[in-house]
Image (cartoon, rainbow, N blue to C red):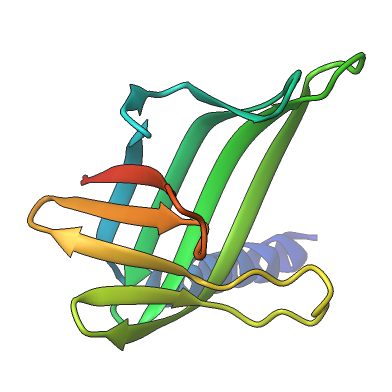
Length: 146
C-alpha cells in the first residue's frame, strides 16, 4: 500500500512540475478595452430599429506576440415584446496590417453570415473601430489601452 502512495505522489509531482514549465500560449502584448460607443460611455445603447436596441456591456481585444487576436464581447439585445437577451462572444483570428490599421481577420465558414473584419486604428493609448463599412455615418467604438 505504501508503495502505491509513493507512485501516486511522484506522478502528481511530475504533472505539477510539467504544468508549471509549459507555457499557456503566446504572451499578450496589447490589451484594448471598449470605453465608449458613439460618444456614450459603457454600457452604451444604440437603437437598431424602432423598439429594438443593442447595449454594449463589455468588449476587450487582446493581441498576442505571434500576431493573433482574441476578443471577448458582452452585449444585451432587446427586441419588441421579448425579454432582454444577453450575448457573450469569444472570437479569435489573425492580425493583418493595412497602413496604420490593424485588421482583425478571422476564418468564417458560413459565408451567408460573414461580415468584413474590423479595422482597429491605433492612436497612442487609444484605438478606434468604425463600422459597419459602407454606412454614411458609421458608429465609432473607442478603446483604451490597458
